[in-house]
Length: 345
Image 1 (cartoon, rainbow, N blue to C red):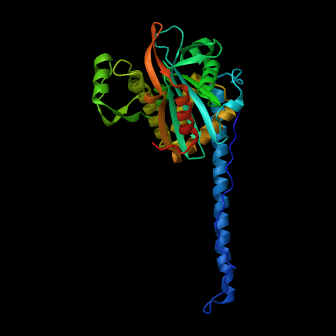
Image 2 (image 1 turned 180 degrees about the horizontal axis):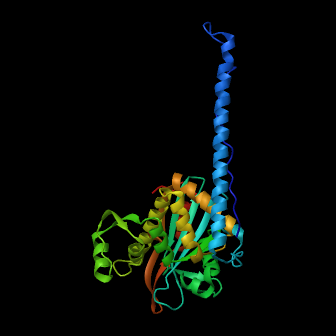
Image 3 (image 1 turned 60 degrees about the vertical axis):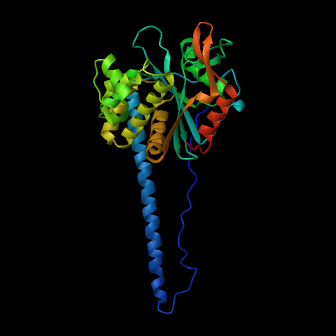
């Protein structure tokens, strides 16, 4: 595993060359310094802009770092993958991959990784890319030496083994992980004042019939935290594929909501969920990642896929269990193309 620190290359700012041509017949030579003054003003404004951005970065870093220290969270190290060498993994220093692990403990018992979404901040192509991994995907659990469903890795070895398993099977480098319970999304969404997503008539009917919540259908339906949680937990309406799609919709809506929230709202939302997080990031890294992610959310396009896709797998019983059986070579190529190239939907 590796920590990635990204620094952009200095931008070249085109300046007019005031010495490239002599003054015209109607222009006095003593007028020339005025153009130089304009150039100086442009440089001064640019320096002030850079200084302002730097100050904002310091303030954000201090605030979020302090919030992390005061609020508290669970920090767990992410060790080097002992089952595969780093040279075998696809990676790029300008792409940060963070595995978001959503656990659902609503029924008690051992927590399983109900949701596994790789969030890729692609600074090469200016995109945020969300990759959902199907929990019923049949993969080799390297510590067990046999094939099992992907979400079983979390049961046997927590976030470390889950990251190792994804790297081992799909050949993609994971830089960091963040583990949350679905309760976190409820609190964060409420602190931000709710989210707006498209809800189909079938989804609204299912929720209204099977839960105590009542929602409407439409292209932009406002949901509070509890309603969004019910929406994310829909299981028996259609398929696991659609369930992961709904989860990505919620994350996308959250990212968009953050970009339109005031600093106090963002601060309250972050501090409310920090105690519920488990991650390998230290407080400064949390702040720095939030800072980079914030700029990415403002400027980058969001894309999403599912692994395995329909053309990358077959489905059937393996023993007594139903599983998705991936064509691993197709999955690896699709994942590489999506994360590390200028992917077009």
